[in-house]
Amino acid sequence: MDINDIYGIIDKFDASGCSELNLEMNGVCLGLKKTMHEAKCDVPVKKDIVRINTEQEQTVTTIQDVQPQSDEHIKEIKAPLVGTFYTAAGPDEEPFVKPGQSVHAGDVIGIIEAMKLMNEVTADCDGTVKEVAAENGTMVEYGQPLVILN
Image (cartoon, rainbow, N blue to C red; front, side, top):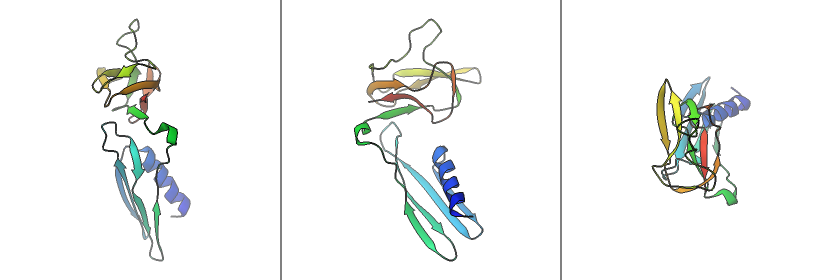
């Protein structure tokens, strides 16, 4: 396993919904762990220390998400499951949220249809809608941002 393989594993781990990974291969031990912000919006704040141990050397690297200073207060409401995202209750209905609209924790921001079941997606925190990141009627993945709040 070379450094490019390790970076590939880190990238895949970062994109996954997993919170912890321990891997041992060919004398290399790799431990990855994500910590989440304690606010209700589950915005990842940083990744903990990544430790890479080989028989010949020991390397410790710290990886942190760098967020622009101007976007400190941005919160993402993410898809809790895989399915089709709808911004309104029906084709002729008004969208649940629009940019500039104020939302409160518990307000419905959209619906995800999965296996013929309609699942309401609610805001985890208060804020003002900056952007509806997912388009109406499109397939969304678990953890994909649906609505961005200020």
